[in-house]
Length: 259
Ligand code: ADP
Image (cartoon, rainbow, N blue to C red):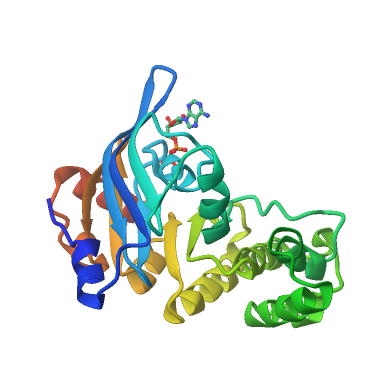
């Protein structure tokens, strides 16, 4: 198996990894969804998680902010163990999540959608939260839409609001769960462009995606999963051009041939 160690990257920068996953197992009833997952995410690293449907990609990232509970093993975020109790608020404050369905608050304006969490969770004043929200909405190209409501926006615009909303909490890491899968094809590019610019500005990101072009262009590391396991991981060119395992080869070749 090819290995690029995020630990090495962290050691080189003199910093601990933001996320560590050690021997993580996850069961849904009798179904074994994650098997012995070991993964470190270094500060500023962008990781794309790819693999067949049902291989556990979404489960893996949902375990990081405890949307799913692991069966055994350990996950830490910035040194804090992910588990029920007081740790959870600490972890959730540091982990932003962007879902396939944008999950915006339909009864709130775009501006309020972005400003609300820092006001409620961090106790920031409305004026300050809204100033910051305007900056973030500008960053995702939505300055002209701050006073609209989610249903007045296209899917691509709504997903960009969701990204701004996640950034508003100034998280240490952003998790993306197939952020472009629910979008009409013509809107995929605008969302990927925003994600690419975040990556370029040093945001740490873990992205479950079917967008192989994006993974190749933007990721520092691509992780290939199948049947609940990390089968192979490597820099994008190496993983896409010279996959080491038969399973990664079969998956990539099936995608290339539109299977
Ligand atoms: P992927 O993101 O790679 O498509 P998922 O992590 O969504 O895979 O799912 C992995 C497996 O776990 C799938 O077989 C799925 O059916 C199963 N699974 C996911 N969520 C649940 C759940 N809440 N209850 C039972 N099984 C689940």
